[in-house]
Length: 174
Image (cartoon, rainbow, N blue to C red; front, side):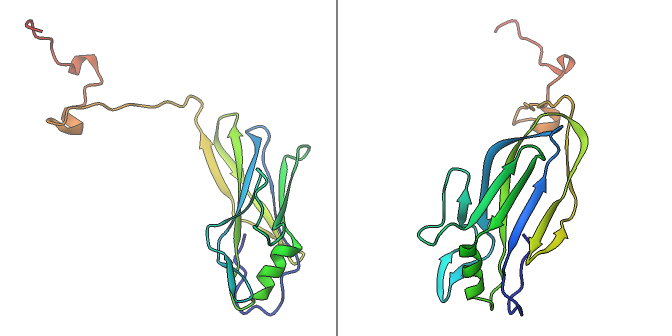
């Protein structure tokens, strides 16, 4: 999410992120997690530290403080929506003197290669929509791993013997 500033003039009444993925390239795994990106207080009491898990697809919820987020997946539009609940907004509003921010991570499986796959999401805060910046990834057609082996005595450059012509000659006594 964006970071709502400290000493804001208005309370948080609604906060969500909606992200649509391209089904040609990404398949939803059903796994997601929401984390606190700032410390979250209930009045003077610190209840979640930066980095704490607030909710996830396994059913983890905020301990004793209510449900923090409603997260839904719409298969038809290939869209995930994470909506802060009244319980989370209440916590954020107890400390208007502090900034607030959270993140959702969604696990996708890349199912097709492409040189550039772009993604943006829409954040809505107090019913005002904001588009995110554009991010992109690439996935090669034929991914491969190149293992480098070398001798320590010769180092990475001189000791790299990937090609047959560079191989040591076998000695007759071995």
